[in-house]
Image (cartoon, rainbow, N blue to C red; front, top):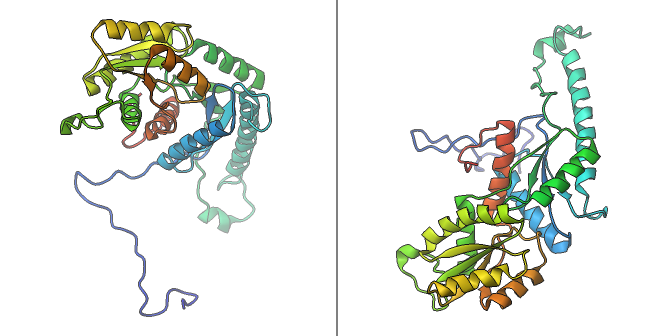
Length: 323
């Protein structure tokens, strides 16, 4: 049994692991600065239980990369308290920011030299980290792989409605990590080789990929960039198509077939909440091919969301992906 001052004699004592020296040592883990505004994920689409589970996992990934992160979720398409609307989440962030600044001002007034009633306490008092009062009250990260002008307009409207000083980041992609995530989802569905280097063959592997996205022409163009990265990984042609444009996926499939592809696959360039699952299934049927799952809570999604937040605030994250 342990004594009040430590473990009983003979019991092992857990000691902190010594820091590895040299050029290959691991970097010190980052932590969220005190007083940093929250990261608010702006979630598109009609919210439901599956969306909540996905978003919670993305938030968990971001928090694991930056301990102490204040991460919140606002649903762009919600007016239900069960799924907090983005405007309400931002309004709460503004209130929290006001309270935090007031507490910081009071703490600064009680610092040494500010007239404390206890000189002995002043001698041992520790200075509090400064909080940037001019910074945003929240940083909004749209939970989408590519640009979506309609979603951005709705986010801006929510910001205006909330009265919150907010910074909105770019979407998560295009990015090589999303090409990696697409590759993984295709391989999980048996539609692509898991590893080119091992020459592992899959009988149902596609020799042409339709990369389906939403958000209009700009989103299709941005998806084409990730599509080129995916094509380089799989050594097969990849063409982007608008999932929200009637017949676009089927026309793109015909284009691939006309170019010599024989086995097609549909890769949703989506996180998941953007459209209902039935939309993807219908598009795959029209194109006559199988479909992989959306990106979902792939680890890169959480890391890219955090990278956008960190870039907006000038926070350096060891080993973080470039945005």
